[in-house]
Length: 81
Image 1 (tube, rainbow, N blue to C red):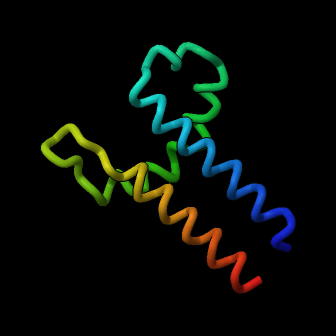
Image 2 (tube, helix red, strand yellow):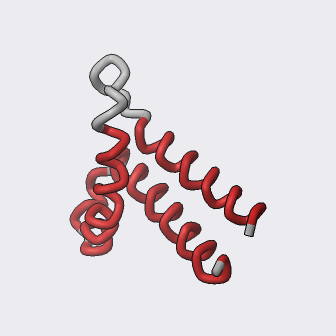
């Protein structure tokens, strides 16, 4: 089972990292791949954004927490499966 879950979580982690970069480089949002990545990652990120307010109203740390949680889950799955 891990043979397909691990690569899937790795790809999703890269999508999250790209999504974080999109917030720093908004000019990349004009490309179709950007829209696809936003649609794939926004539901997961919305879960964290609803629970963690931005620091000072501008610094949103929820994507970093979401990425760390995903990587932690991936590590646990590798260890136990």
